[in-house]
Image 1 (cartoon, rainbow, N blue to C red):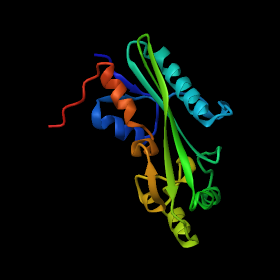
Image 2: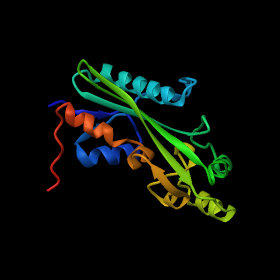
Image 3: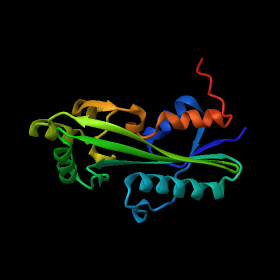
Length: 190
């Protein structure tokens, strides 16, 4: 059976995928900052494809999975904040509003290439300055698109979501389904 190679250093993607399969983590060397499209969904897919193809050359007999998650507010991409001030600004922008979390994915297995995107709508509650400052102090905003992590302390910021929770975390469940369809067996947990 082919090995599953995750083209990402994201601990969240690794955690989600390793719940279902035995995987090997091998981050790609793609410079994501150089890939920009007008449409955020196309940007996420294009970055995921670049990551997947980067590793497909190195591991041609295995199954490669790559993903990229983007947070958008009114069509504007909110990347990973560089510092606490930028994180604070993002959280204030998101306060009381609905934004979209887009994860583009690409799976390469032999001559099969599966690509797509999952979009989840996330509504933030009205955030007080005190709540924003508390969240900033957790340091959880680091290395997260939009400056928050729904799977941790950031859950308190969210009023509700429409769509796949795991997409907001970083890897939509549709990727797991596609791997099963490609013949990969779920790992035994007991």
